[in-house]
Image (cartoon, rainbow, N blue to C red):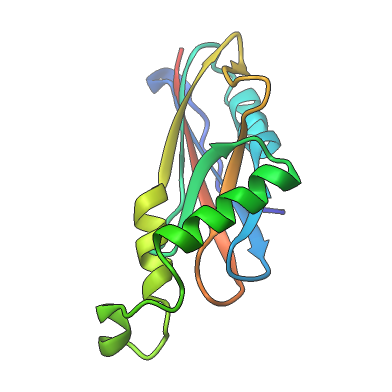
Length: 151
């Protein structure tokens, strides 16, 4: 994980924006980013509110998963059944990158997640971790924008 120096303090508006960057090695690479999100909430100085986690880009997504090998394998398997890599995708007819399935998968999971926090602590279930997903068919660095709002 690489932390970019783009934090903006909350001030009177109660908004704090922070960016992180994660190297993603391959298609369906997943990263547990819970600690990075929790650190941004802590650095904001805000005690209660919501934190939005957003992944810019059409082939990345963020979700909550139990970050353990069985769930990760099941998640990848489910995505292959829902949007198989080898299906015919119109995107691939117009673009030479062959990642039509990546766009569909990212659209299904979604680019953002909102998590409440109280007392400066994320309200997550015992087995929930904030998980970044690279759906692209190549390695890349994924930027994550974290915006903390509250009081």
